[in-house]
Image 1 (spheres, rainbow, N blue to C red):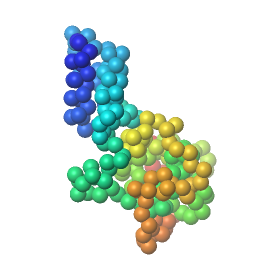
Image 2 (cartoon, helix red, strand yellow):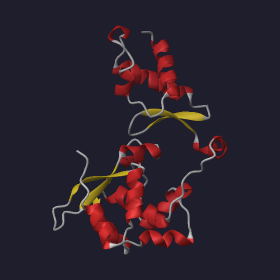
Image 3 (tube, rainbow, N blue to C red):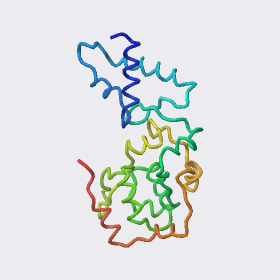
Image 4 (cartoon, rainbow, N blue to C red):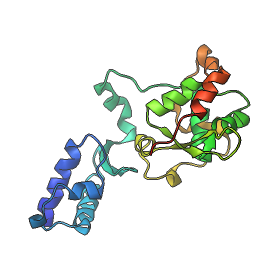
Amino acid sequence: MHQDQLTKIVDALLLTAEKPLSIDKLLHYFHEGDDVNRADLTTALESLTSLTEDRGFTLTKTASGYRYQSRDEYRQWVGQHWQEKTPRYSRAFLETLALIIYRQPITRAEIEEVRGVAVSSNIIKSLQEREWIRIVGHKEVPGRPAMLGTTRQLLDYFNLESLDNMPPLTEIQDIDKLYPELAIKTPDSANDDKVSAEERDATDKQEPPQ
């Protein structure tokens, strides 16, 4: 297959894809007779990256693959396409997420030790429902508490290829400065830190996915 035609096909696939496409996923769209290999797809992706340099969108590589993404400087206009606003989260939520990102694998008790307050099951549940965190194992200590880690979905949300692309976080309190669009301060945010022993036990007893 001619490289120009391949580039146009990859362009069309990326435009219509609901999720990021890796090179392996792109390969599945071609048959043996198409004579397309990984190197050809890499060349096509490089060409598309160059073509978007002067456009309002860019070709971004995330943990799950490649996708077109509008540039951050146009967010306030692009965001008007959707009535649903970006979810906002309490400081307790963001601090818990930051600790899992930067100190994973980490247990709930270890998060509480750093923050100095209990972690609500609502926070853990919300992070799991968004598929941002998962149980990666159990710590070999009495009670075998669950160890938490992040997922590819989290990296995709922040348009990151790997955790190495995360900005350094010298102080856990800086999480709302790194991602101000996610932060919200409400009088009810303190409720996120209220937790019972039963809630904590329920989290620790969960099993990691097989």
